[in-house]
Amino acid sequence: MIKWGIVGAGNIAHSFSKDLALVRGGELVSVASRDLEKAKGFSAIYGAPNAYGSYEELFKSNTVDVVYIATPHTSHAELSIAAMNHGINVLCEKPIGVNKDQVKEMFQVARAQNVFLMEALWSRFNPTIKKVKEMVDDGSIGDIGYLHADFAFYALDRDEKGRLLNTSLAGGSLLDIGIYPIFLSYLLLGMPKDIKASAHFFKTGVEMQVSMIFSYEKAQAMLYSGLNSNSEMKAEIAGSKGSIYIHPRWHETTGYTLEVDGDSTVNEVGKLGKGYTYEIEEVHTCLNSGKKESSLWSHKNSLDLIEIMDTVRSKTGIVFPFE
Image (cartoon, one colour):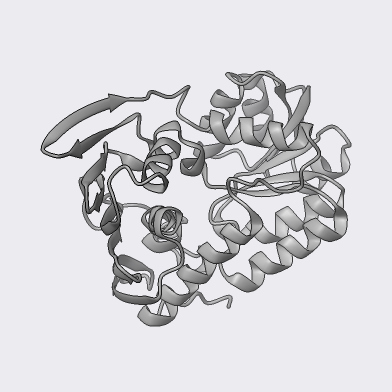
């Protein structure tokens, strides 16, 4: 039985813990928050025997095999490194770090400590998205010429000191949700040859929307993220023989539509829980077989992804005060 610890007791940690309960072979044993009462309340809900009022206490507790880092972006690198330096395996919420220098250091520590480290990019393990990648790779819709993916919701009425609208917490749409359209383009088409990007900024200094065009040898990807409106969130991959539409919200989808030769077929793939179950299963598979990184979402994949996001940031002037 793989023993899990949760670092940070916010909303995403609740979603993750509900899904962990659906996966065989793992159990939640420890929860850490900077607020001990919050940690105790969280652990009571999910039946975890241990609650800690600091992250360091959990890392020193010798109670867990792996931790899930569920704190804001800005502490991902620091807390992952602290956990790994105690010999603990890590699943770190995306983005794994806020820039490439952070991510490189994290993987260096993982190698030095000989522990498992993976970015929790849950969409990579979604059954529908895995199926779509298979179809693209086997030529089901021919040569890809066009990809479109977006992710947006209205958030400008939220707390300006909260993580989405606060530059000190690496806020803005790009790192939080723009990472998803970028990931899909990278997964299906690889590293772009050229990137064009345009951003608008909110009064707090965070970028509130960004449009991107990724150019490849024979394809273009039109990508978007935003916090000042909703968007449809249906992804389209169009090729020389047909198209695939990933149903909304595509990053946590349960199905897709395939169009070939004028025939359209709707395919419902389904999913277990909210969908964190699949990345949890991947962690279990890796740990049980002694692997230090996933072959489905490797260290190189995470480094490529943050490199693309660093490039978008440099082209649009997205800078955080701590950098």
